[in-house]
Image (cartoon, rainbow, N blue to C red):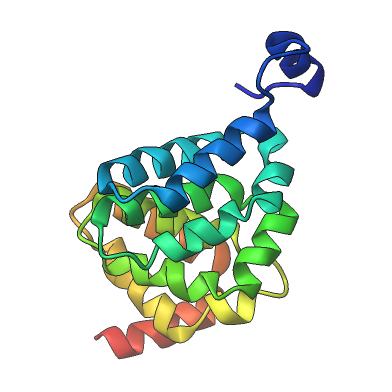
Length: 185
């Protein structure tokens, strides 16, 4: 559920911890902890906060997008899952989308498609759809990616198959798909 600023102020009261302070404490704890379990839990919480557009300014201020981009390259499968989910949750916002694309996010998210983790792959595919805007099309809608989508469209996993088919139908033109099919035969 999305919250209004007025609702948040009423809920926390004049002396309660504000949303920015709470998010700051999560970021600080993430940066300082040595515990992988704590990092996973914090990153999962931050990813969940990404659902609420009221948090986008705070996320940019606290460099949470950078945390997600960094964690997506981690060796810990769960951190990658939560980071890819976090990026998926925030990338509909125009500023976040542009930031992710300009900071090598397309390449990083694409790497997630090789993951064995189903949730990571689904988040990655969805994120790539959301990251498409005129300036990013050339980077995302490549022949190599069309070939990858054709392969995923054949997947026995219905979620992958459906997302790949939607991607092919909505974002690639017929010529691109035919060209990719030549290489996949």
